[in-house]
Length: 432
Image (tube, rainbow, N blue to C red; front, side):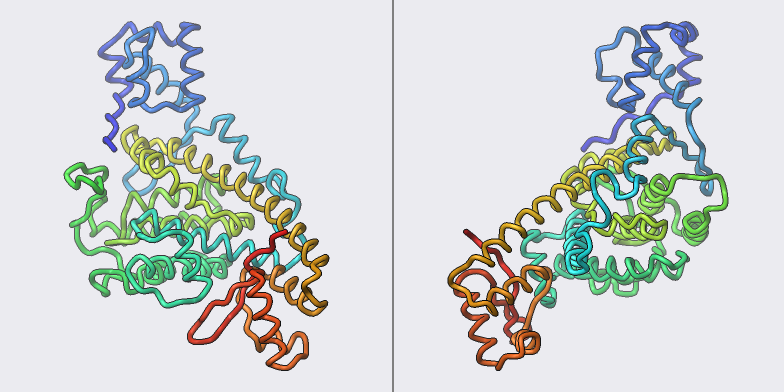
């Protein structure tokens, strides 16, 4: 991916083209400005379009319009800004609405088992995709199987995923905690455990400037140079104060969470693991502000499927006077897509479960106990069952429980998985 061209300075353009002032009152130009602001085009996109006037002149009018609508945020020596368009407000409202869109109550309804299954599945998806964004080389299916079986990771990629899963589960339990520097370092230590070239770098801010954000295929193409390492402690202290305080001028929690995500990437406080840490902090912030729906939405999966747009959103912000609108708009779009995926997933799973339950209840090749065992495994399909659990739940002898599980496995209803030399069982599906 090419680094986008830096946007021209508005005042320099007006000084260069004094006649640009006339465009500020031109109805046709104002119509274009409205259109391009709705799409929030960057200079890199605008300059490649066929336009009725010089691109720089039109850009000056666009920048003036945005400046009048922008909200400004000071952080350290940096000045950031963002614009809340009608589309931004629509997305914020969608995620603020009780139940979020078409979801009625929490996913899974009244069933604690269903809710747990949705959450476990989402956390796995989030951990896997977040690690894959930073280079974890494994398939989603293989990674999920490893997490479900609680198998020890065999290589660097699997360690990244296991670390991510453990960390995000801990963060879900930390949502009532205030973020501080020690907590931030704790999160980083968990994310990078046994994956750093130098183990001493785990849970520690970087102590050198031997780091740039560059094109993975060509390291000479530098995207971003983070601030000097000596400035990091002060920046991260301010970061934690910003994350923990809601007393200053109100910033919508979703927008603030996205800002925190951006700032970790911008400051790059660690030698490695900055992206995973940034996405984890966003997750913590949203849960800490009562957005329970984020427990069910693996947003990193959407980011993974649009990696170039994700990276470009960072670059557009940095090459246009730190205008965070590009990064905010991209992330809100990804969150909306994750919500749509969740809605589709819930509908599909409920239909599958209803169909499977009907088939189980009418299956002529199962006795009542076997059908009930299968219902139990279906209702808690996120977890593994042992023969001992089946013995206890149904008050049957070991041989009876073993035969039932073996029979259900032979029919293809459940699968056997060996975990630490012990046979475990999980629902695998019912076919008509």
